[in-house]
Length: 190
Image: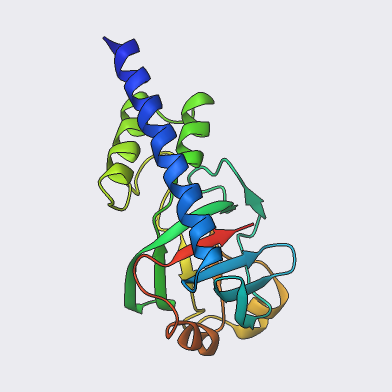
């Protein structure tokens, strides 16, 4: 029975991944707004199709860099394609645009590496298939997003990668970004 469920889950995973590829390609082909984050250049670009609308410089990422296989408390920023899952306008980080992390690719890899249980994998898969934010309390962590610095020190922001895995901008930048972002906006972190 477990083997059959895994086969069905694999089929659903394939459908989900193909759907993400189609969505990503169609976003770049039409005029939809999406976010491109370059973790090497420390920039966040607001894109409309293939056209750059605005670029924010000096973006901070996780204090220990990036990863494709993020786990709780590793202070790394996950790479991949996500969507804005929720918005918190009254965050301690000024504004917080939560990502629907982990995505199916992150979860599949973590399951194959025995970093999450089969039940965690199914819960993430089920949430994704239902269009919901996946569980935020698995060993992969959660509460990853794009946010400001709140009452934090702007000098630290300009000098170091300081987040626990999120993408951080200044409060002024996050206010400017908020005019472009809505729930469902695609975010590519590379």
